[in-house]
Length: 260
Image (tube, rainbow, N blue to C red; front, top):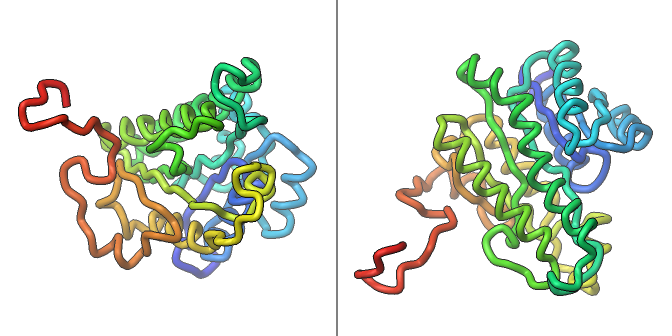
């Protein structure tokens, strides 16, 4: 069995063939996890997983049948999933206001960000509940908590992911929203808003947070939002949030506000 802080755990990372997903797959494998990577492009995924000794399970996260088959293969070859990382997702093709967006492309982004995690939850979480163990990480974004007028589909999808995470946590499943910050990836480079940007969040900061979650060091943050590059593992471990801290809620307009 490999040595490391995650030795003995099975981690399933979606969108693992490139960008943050690939960095997460690599980092979790380096910490001893048995890693399965899921992505649509079979050839690129196979090459990525070969490079780190992981299992490649090609599937489209918006296809529930394909997701179930992939999870069954992971379970058969590696064991039940201990750490699910929902990273796969598309981005708006153009920086335009919502009324100018291409309807089909807009909806494909929302589907990837919502239907994808939902399908993985459907395929993975029942076994976690039956075992009484396991953790889910949803890759969030600053656009989860505040809308961006030029990336409305991504904002909608990422905001919805917060509610998936919170629903899991409310049902007793350990689930976390991890915003990666602005990591230097092909997707980020393709976004006009980041042209000329240089203050990148290191991918290692994202890996550190997700690994700490997998280790069980941050269970008291279940159902809440953390941000790589700003929140350190040590600070989060020492901080115990209360009430609705780091959750998205209405702000009351005053003490007598009957809605908030």
